[in-house]
Image 1: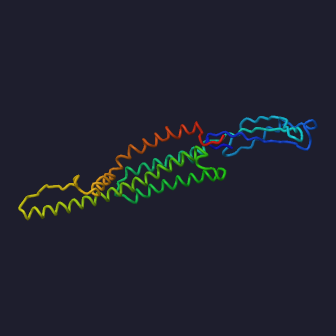
Image 2: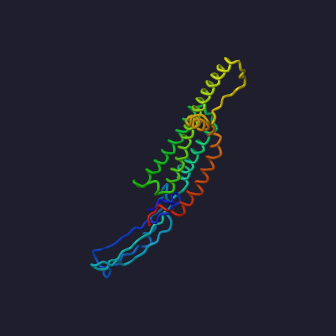
Image 3: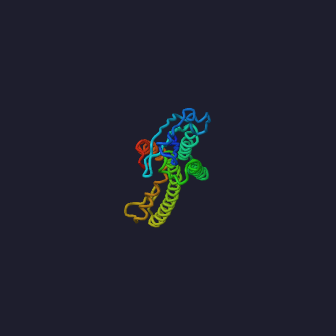
Length: 255
């Protein structure tokens, strides 16, 4: 079975019958039409479609034998997976995106929101994988690839807040160092009788390389403003330029 197009996949399952005790010249096997009805049983995830039967002769070194194959077409019901897997994963991405509108000072809210979204997508991904054949990798199903894609964006939310928090700490350290230099300059100039009111000491280009680098790192405190428009743009671009083409090209499906 090929699960790449899941949840929009259609599987064709063959039921093969063969009699190798007698040659085809002695016994011919074929499906009787009433036997092709397979009853009226219904399942939660599948809808039975067309059933077609074929009869053929299998040639081997020992002789020719009669075989009959019934091809049962099963179409997956997409509603359950669309709601439980795809929409839920997308909603947790939206919930993670809302973190960019929470004040950075509310650290518990930001961290809890990011971790809950990340863990919930992982749990949903594992729940879907448990319903599929063991050993199926993320690259074996477009649905799993989409959920993994959503999980990466929830991870970006966590990493963004870590970078923002670090930028705030660096900015506070720079401000403290700037204030200390200003006070020191005021003390030096006051001994010389020079007024320094309104003087602001900045880290200039002649400062050590480490200090200039820390000044650039401090700009990470503005990441929330950037991510409010960059985050949805990257998600839409990644979906339309990467995931959708992969869905139609099926690059990871073995021939």
